[in-house]
Image 1 (cartoon, one colour):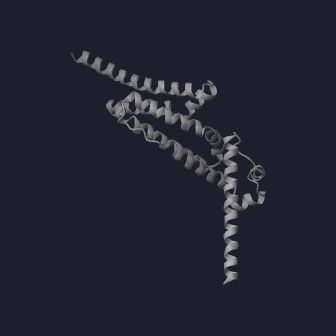
Image 2 (cartoon, rainbow, N blue to C red):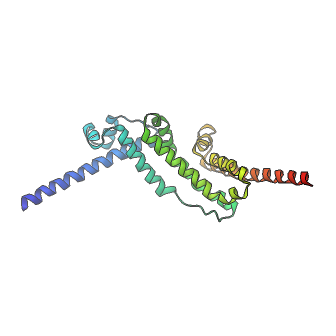
Length: 219
């Protein structure tokens, strides 16, 4: 009986060490990506995780599998930190401000991972699919938050407003504001807020102008 307990204890210890090594490898990869290094080598990962290179490949079938697991872990962190629903019942100015505040913080957080995915996706079907899934969810959130405004437009114009809002709240635009235009987070957030408000205002003005012209023609 004592020998059996001793064997079980050893197995539990090995399992715990294996789990710690696996977690250390995942955290090492995530740290590299956050620092702007999207494709660290197995040797670099092992050194940072304080494990042998052999352990990296014992824990993960290949680098593609490791990157996919790290991306899933990152998605969990993102969801926990930033997916906060903004009620479409709020007045429009409050809703725009609340939505852009949350969205901009999330876009800032995902920036190193999005840049990494741009490099890795062409060779990784898993990463390509993960990016598409995340984008679809982000688009659906925009539609839900601004559904009252979208529904007020004529059916033929709803798709246009939806497209413009998605573009105004997208990561490529955020990266343009932060990287190319070198704006601070605060100024980039203010610019995004102004663009969202302007898009909505313009589409309602266009619809009003069309209705006005039609009224004059019928009169």
